[in-house]
Every structure is written in structure tokens, then in C-alpha cells.
Image (cartoon, rainbow, N blue to C red; front, top):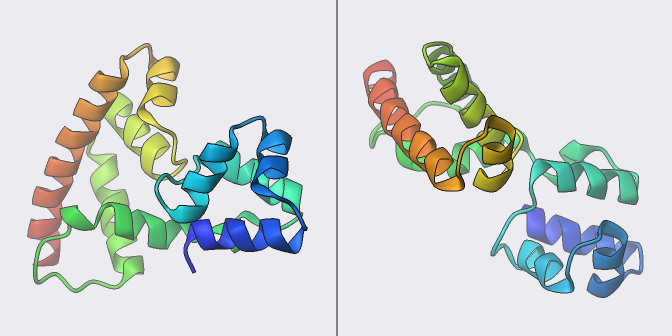
Amino acid sequence: MDIGQTIAGLRSKANMTQEQLASELYVSRELISKWETGKSPPNYKMILKLADLFSVEVDEIFDKERILTEELSACVPVGADAPPEVLSRTVNTFLQSLSGRDRYVFIRRYYYFEDAFEIGDEYGLSAEHVRTILMRTRKKLKKYLKGALT
């Protein structure tokens, strides 16, 4: 089950409408709809709020390792058939080779699921600069994985 379906299920189980959930989280009903339809995933801070609101563990809402694998799947070279735990270890090794800033930007995006604006605010960067850092880091990761997994 994906994040959107899980959120919709938790909301339904709590007998809440999208409007009521939006009100509880101080977001728009349209954003709740985007989460539930998979058009836009919630960031990690919202996932923490959802887990607290519905009295569930974060892991019940989403599987970080699966999400990481899906979002970064374009970086995995064709023909590399590594289990998620091997891929996670390899990515962690790669992250150690990055500069501090690039590593933290990458982690905040792909571990904490923060968007480019949130990350940029933290580091005094524009959202476009954050997206550029992430794009370059994904290219480096793809090259690294090609050497490590094939």
C-alpha cells in the first residue's frame, strides 16, 4: 500500500473528512487530496504529524527504505539487481564521499522528505540551487552505483 492509500485509510478509520484532516494539520483540503491520490507526497514533518494525530508509528504510514529505493530508482543502473538492504548500504557509503553540504541536502531530501524550499531555507540557498545540487548528486550516485553494483 502506498502512502496516499495509507493516509486515506487512517483518515477514514478516524471518521474524518479531508477537510477535517486539513484543518487539524493547518493545510488545505487540496493538499490532503494530493497526498491521498499520490500526486504529491507529504514531507517528513507532516508524516510525523500524521503519525501523532492517528496514534500510529511512522513506519505504519510509509517504509523509508522502499520510498528511497523508488525515488532514486533512476540512479540504479540497468541490470543491477541488488536487494534494498544492499542498495541502502551502498548509498550510505556513497554519501560518506560527498561534501558536508551536499550530503546534508541529499539526506534532508531523501531521508526526511523535505522539499527544495525547506532545505534552501535551512542552508541559505534558493530552491533552484538545492534542485541543482540534488540533480548533480543523483548523477554522481548513478555513476557510483554503476561501478559498485555491476
